[in-house]
Image (tube, rainbow, N blue to C red; front, side, top):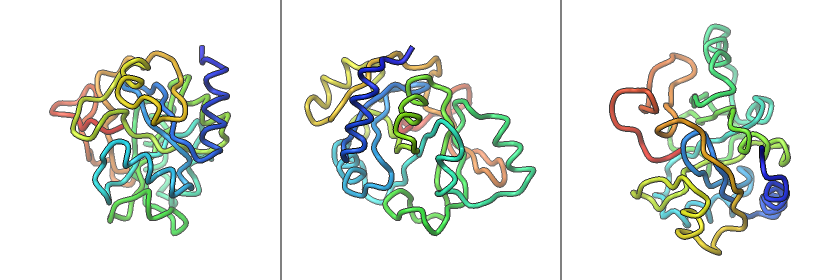
Length: 197
């Protein structure tokens, strides 16, 4: 079960422009309000993340992602819906309202409806999608416990939500929503997985 006091503190931090850590399907994630440019920039700086690299957004329901995602065909939507909620990330064509600080130079935005009870509960409490990137320094292995996150980032984070990560062995695979094409390997796939959630 999600730790309610931790979640309430994380919600307050997100609403106040903070950066929080929480368990996801495979690793601990770092997150913030995707519409807060300063918070997203601070999150990227904490990781030492290269400029111009797009972020993944997570949500508890697709309605939280809809403002960022353009419409796809019915067949493509059925393919996506069959995998959600769950550890499957899809790149949708982005809307014109999708902030520039969330995406790379492509026309897409990577999104996921999470089945992880803590990540989903945090999105529910915040009533919005969250930026979700693996909790690690860029180029280092992703962290999998609250203690590891605290040791790495300490008081640089506004809140760490305690909880167990899910059973996935690696960050989620990423596929193109319109075509189904695999963009990044994930748990259960052949090949190496990127360390970024």
